Image (tube, rainbow, N blue to C red; front, side, top):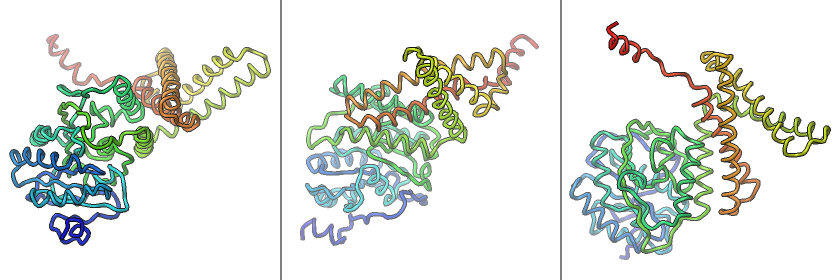
Length: 412
């Protein structure tokens, strides 16, 4: 009987049923399987045999009999799923899931984790751009206590092979965008767009994940209970077989994912900050109308004055309302003037960021101008909020530990 019929009939022992319901990983008691490595696939039959062979050789050395490989295939036209089933006859640690309705790399990874039996969950791309041999180093970091071990192109010894300057710039630009929107998440790793990592099941069990597109790592960091993170450098290799799935749509979904995760993790102050921002828009429009429309000023000076008045309005309300408790602890008078100067500088940088992001989206990705502008406004709002929270209204570090040390040094 062919592998196709065996898989469709669900009679082969390597076949996995597709989980349904929420994208939530269960907390299971520790079993014989220590590591479950998910390989999401779509039309990867030309790479799969080599990948499974190399992964098995590495893991048989460091985790003999205590790992499993899970191919989760999105019903590939080239029948990657059927090839995986044939490989399962040679590699007993391999199991296969064929999805026919649900699609997408990120959801494939989570469905694989839901069916997995391991204490540690992992993911690797099927196109051999992630060197399989790095798995052993990632496992070593988990063994040394890391909750999350990430293979990074930007860590020591890492790199991006023969990437063009444009592709490198786009990658770094995506990372900068993430830092603006989710600094407390994206800032924890050097390569937030990595699709090659291991995470302890206990760190994400019970969390309802809601990924979008290809980038699942920021979802894991943002919604999981991740304490210690370790990074392992690796050189990202160019695909030698098959077709790349990286398109402009991937970057658009990445931005949407960032915004969605940002909204889900918003602190209470952000709603106040956004409301103040809307009042600033009203002030800006009113001053511009007065100076340009009624008094006849030239457009540029009218806009500059209007923008500065709007920033002054925003600062005052944020200082009194959004961050009022922090402002009171910092003090007023000269302290307030210093906060206002920082606020102006950060908002000016945010304006430059907004213009640059707008040009990139429209010029490079041909995104609709108004959609791109909405994204730019959202990113700028996030930038302004987080940077001002960190720099304009941050409280000084307590001196309770430093002062006694200084006194002891002085013989007090």
